Length: 394
Ligand code: GAF
Image (cartoon, rainbow, N blue to C red):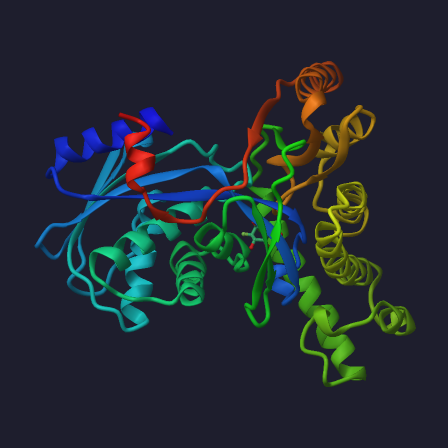
């Protein structure tokens, strides 16, 4: 982060002025609770130390002037009227937020923004949510918008749904904005009630193994899974009209009406119902500091995603299989939408170096591909860079 912040500051001064605010907005891991957010279920993510840094200032014009430092690209647009989508992809993450803020009744003026980060793009670590949350938080600060935290998450999600055009749930934006250092966030994606659970055991590390695989399929299959879950709900509603989402369905009920559902719909529903339960049980594990049991649930989650929800792939399965045989690994699973990206692994500190070495070499040996491994920390959600964060880099 240190050189990154310096570069952002210099870049902002080169393009614009010497006065600006600096916002840090994190990526996220999801410990457990995958594909449950859009089913009004539970998730247990955490913000991480990899993220995006943004410098922002009002410019007194009716324009957004944007610089994407890592892409060596810039974009300028009049924001006094209706904002059109850009043909380039990256400006839409920022413009979508401006558009949503306006539609939610907040007024803002022109601004300049330079951003850059250290989150690998497309790895399932939510670089897009970090960018949306970062620009939203920055604009709320610049223009004193006073937006409650839960509404911030809704606005960022809506920017992605309506302007970027990705039908994601709310997990990524919510945790990027509201995460806390050393704590996992349990989110009820129906009510948006949330609680924090300690995740700061110094003997355990969160290690991400990045397959490097980025598949277009991820978006189309994501939308198909959403539809399949909706289909399951609509059939089950025929039996019990009080059912609003899979969150309301017990496993015994699902089995009772199995014959009404096509086999793939049944499997998707079963996975979501079981995964919701796992999240609640995993939260109890954290309260009891039982990371061994927590880790087992991660393996079960992966199995469900692989066999029943069918969003895994050879590379992710290989990584989980290798991890499972390693000393000091408590749990491992694919993370995020699936079909590529990362696995998340809970690894004992003492075995960390050995784990990294072994998983890289076995993965390369089995699949002939190289593997990137990131050792992450559970960190604070989107915030203004503090004096101490800035002085520590003088
Ligand atoms: C992606 C989406 F953006 C999230 O909302 C969530 O659905 C996740 O996939 C799967 O759990 O990250």
